[in-house]
Length: 385
Image (tube, rainbow, N blue to C red; front, side, top):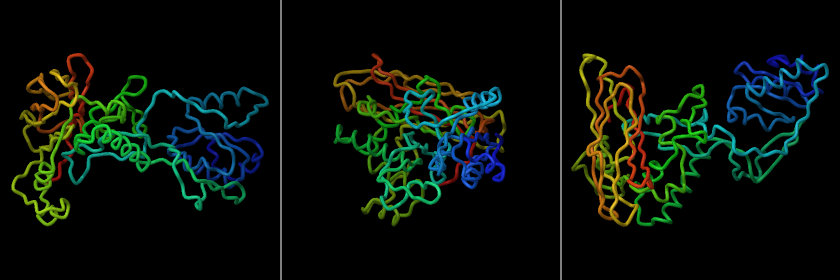
C-alpha cells in the first residue's frame, strides 16, 4: 500500500485487493491499477466523490473513501498479520451529514458580463444523478473490453442541477400561473436553504470545506416546498429588463432582437429589482480614510396572507461595513400590495478582503415567512457595462 505509482509493483499483487492512498493525483493511481489489471482496489483520497466518479466505472470492483475512514483501513492492515477484505455493493446510505456541500465542479461567480447581478442564484442537486442515457453509448467497460449499455447513467455537473431548478420553477408556475418569471425566480432564491443538515453554513469542497460564499452558492440549496409560498417576491416587468439592457449599452438592434419588439432605450437603470445584492468597493487609489456608500432600492410584493401582515428586517452583519435598511419594518394591508425599501452599505473605498458577505431577511410577525436575500461586498474590479 502506497501511492500505487508503479504498474510493475501492482502487477505483483494484482490478485489481491489493493489499497492506495493518493497524493492529490487519484487519476494516475486508478489508471495504474487498470493497467495492472488488479482484481479490486480501495482508494483513500481527499478528492471529492465527483472527481472520483469519472473512474467508478472501472473494470474491477473499487471503493473510494476519505482520509479519516481510509486511515482506519490502513491501521487495520498494519496491525493485522493476515488482513482480509471483501467488497460488497448492496447498501444504500441516507442521512449523510453534513449535506449538502458545494462540489468542486460547480459554476461560480461573478458573471463577467454583468457582475452587478449576483450569480449563481442558488444550488440544486447535481452529483451522481441517475439520468436518462443513450442506449447506444456505453456506460462502463468490464475487463478486458466488454462494454455495458443502459438507458440510465450516473452523471454529475451543472447540467444535472439545472433540470431540478427548471422542474421546481415549473411546479411554482402551475401553483401560481399569474406569476412572472421574475417572481418565480425570487421565490426560489429567497426561500433557499443557506445551512446544511447540521445547521452550519454550507461548505465548499473546493476550498477546504470552508463556508461557501454567495459568489459560489448563491442564496443556497433550492427548497421546492418553501418556494411555493414565499410570502414576498421581488417582481420585475419586461420594461425593467429593457432599462437594464440599455444600461448595459446594448444597441437598439440587439434589444429588438432580444425582446422581439420595437422597444428603444428611453430610460436606463442597472438597479434591477433582484432578490440579491452586489456592492463594489474597489477604488484602490482613494484615501483609505474615505468612505464609499452603495445604495440599493427594492420593491417587494405581498403574495402571502390575504389580510394585513408586517415584516421586520433582520440583517446579518458584514465585517468592516455598516449596513442598514430603511424602513426597518414593512406593513401590508392586503395581498399583492407593494412596499419599497432602501438598503445601504457604507465602508472604505477599498476592502481589505476580496469578498465579504451577509444577508437581509424579512420576517413576518408570526414567523411564518422568512424572505432571505444574500448580500455581497467585494473588491473585485467591476467591468464597465
